[in-house]
Length: 417
Ligand code: FRU
Image 1 (tube, rainbow, N blue to C red):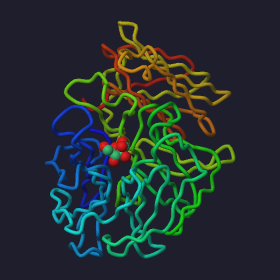
Image 2 (image 1 turned 180 degrees about the horizontal axis):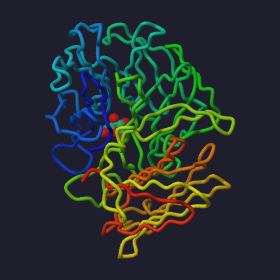
Image 3 (image 1 turned 180 degrees about the vertical axis):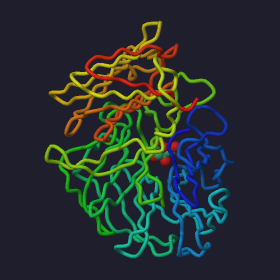
Image 4 (image 1 turned 90 degrees about the horizontal axis):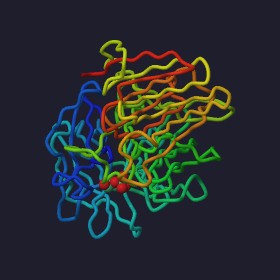
């Protein structure tokens, strides 16, 4: 699997679709797989949601809940927007009247076409300012914004991108999210990510339903690890939450990671927010509160699936290691406020020249505590307040069983067995 797709919440259930190859373990035959959850932690496999047709294979996209039946498919119909990749990339629609289990493709597909070869990943959302729907689409190295009253007929409004942010690759998987009177435009880019390959940059700005205006000058990244891509948020999430999930890999080596029986997982869910620090505005990512419910109790040494909470007292170094002398180090320098993650000796790094690496970020405003989510082959390091996050894959040939830490106090929690 790769990108998370079509995430929405309805009647107590979170739905998460994903780019999936049902017939092999490398990228091909793109299909929307489907899973569901009531708590964002435990996920259930659901039957395949959207399969290829004679227009092509099914690429990334989004879902909305049509509460007022604006499209005429029924009240609370779930409407999916996705790219079909065939001779070229076109945007299509499918609807579900059983809450997202099965979809019927709209017979007027495709609903949008373009000259550009890279034209994909529609994200649709309701916008009160124009009393209509907006769609944002990745087109080459720009985002195009459209509007619609009925979800079927779309009017082009404006483009965003030229002169802003990083342009060392193709822009993909956009999202446009409202936080009070500000908006955040998520822009996944590949290659050209901060540490090479795939990464998520973002722009903070203003949006009136027609035009997005970035009020930010520099390039900002949502996650400062190497394995955080195709990030998008849930539609219709409760309490107006902005819950994001990313694909935890990088196209530099995503097809070749040394896993067995599966290829790729998603990040833990994160709640996004805007904060100010160092005289600037940032989009932060906090571990979603549901993750606290995974804690099973305090343990003495790290297990294969655990959370390490490190209260920072001084310059900090945390080392996770195994008996084969494979290790990762996570360090934080109080003065410079720089957080680093070194996986050069983490285990198997042989499958890609781009894997052995150290990632780093200056935490805006500094960090007092880290929350480190360790799983079989991933480590997600959060500043506990969400001011910075770093997601990195690791492939130790034996689990990390020792923790040594200086400059901080650590508590380790066993997570779901
Ligand atoms: C991002 C991406 C999307 C595309 C999908 C195809 O990882 O390239 O732009 O829709 O993957 O699987």
